[in-house]
Amino acid sequence: MSVGLGSLMEKLLLIDDEADVQYSFRRIFDASDIELHTASSGEEGLRLIPRVKPDLVLSDIRMAGLNGLETLRRIRQLDPQLPVILMTAYGTTQTAIEAMKLGAYDYLLKPFDVPRLKQLVADALKAARDTRQAVALRPQLEPQDYELGVIGRSAPMQEVFKLIGQLAASDATALITGESGTGKELVARSIFQNSRRAKEPFMAINCAAIPENLLESELFGHEKGAFTGATAQRPGRFEQCHRGTLFLDEIGDMPPATQTKILRVLQNGTFERVGGNTTLQVDVRIIAATNKPLEEAVARREFREDLFYRLNVVRVHMPPLRERQGDIRLLVDFFLRKIGGAAGAPKTIGERTLAILEAYHWPGNVRELENVLRRAVVVSKGPAILESDLPAEVLQPAAVAAARPGAGTPPAASPGLVSPAVPAGPVSTAPTSASAPGASEAAAPAAGPTVTDPTLTGDIRPLVLQLFRWARLQSGIKVLPAVERELVIEALKETQGNQVRAAKLLGITRATLRKRVDKFGIRRELNVS
Image (cartoon, rainbow, N blue to C red; front, side, top):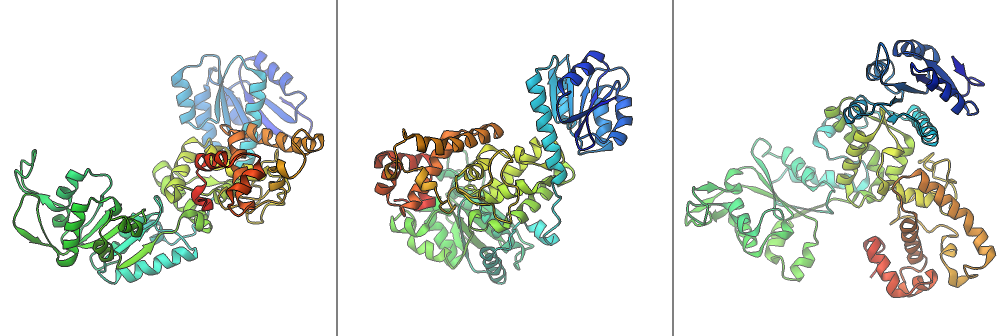
């Protein structure tokens, strides 16, 4: 039977063989905007689904005939996108695990906590609406792009691709620079795969991950008895990579003694194993990478100047992701297909979720984006990745920007970014957002009435309430640190980085401001000295 007032209501299907549970649901949802349908068995519920087309199903687990888990399996065959909440009075760890493995939206224990039940139903219905609006990304790349993994159509990446092509046509030594997580090793592999050495070995070694006393042996090999534990002769990476390409990652962390031997190999292709006297000749192309400014290391005499110039024949700089945010959709497409290949069909993704990903500043660059998407694929409760599947640190900058007063309207490229419970504002990242009109005034007690002024308090209270509504929607968000960070950034922008004026604007001391700059990690983004 159904309880409801019209076809525009969202439809809930309850599958439970207990009459008192059905009665309770009728009472709970009698005055709501939900149209309730009930079934007394899994078989009856499966027959009702094609006719009723519910937006959400709640099913008991222990029932005569089809139990709840088997009913869920069959619902997944009928409609993979339909959210299902399983209920039981006999909760066990294994049952909960099995329910989530089968793709249940959630798992609820009887007897019900009514406010918890209503909130869970509201959340599931919202997820269903967002899932219907989600889109499967069309393939935006050529098949070979998916294979190589070096993705981008932005101007900085086009320059990278040009250099890859030029380096692939030669044997020149290359130095790849850029922040951690930008894809330096992928560029090195792309140079190798397109070069004349593509059929020869490619080896990568992380100079920062190997202890100093072992790195030389790893690179050049050792003779039997060269040191304690050297029970046999062992060839190093240079010998193993003869005629191929050796990728030296994090070369800025290489110890000085090893730098000297690397310089010799680059000059004439010769070296000796550790503990040996025989000079060996090899033909190895070296591609090096670092996330450190080597020029500064040279100035501090931490890196050999002559080695730097030998490595820096052709430099390829990998831009951080925040400088090529137009590539984020391509990267999301790439990673969802890559992850989907191992976990099943690729997930779809909501436009609002994409807008949030495009608004985030990505301090961990492409590697962080991949990890965020891997997490989202695991925790998502349906075929689409939604806002609720993103971690708090990704949601926070966009939500704080959305709560700013006087922020205007969102850009056309990012529709629906802000939750309906929060008034619309611009898409923004904390390090790069433009100053919002009115933001500095809100942060400037010294420039206007004191905080005890009732007029100012009346102006601020709606903003505070907006922030609290936002915090309730985003689990794990801490309002005060989020707002405090944004105020510090805007004050520094308002004063062009002048810390004395910014501190005065915020009503704090300069020492306190400097502590906040360090605490929130905003020194580099704002070029604050």
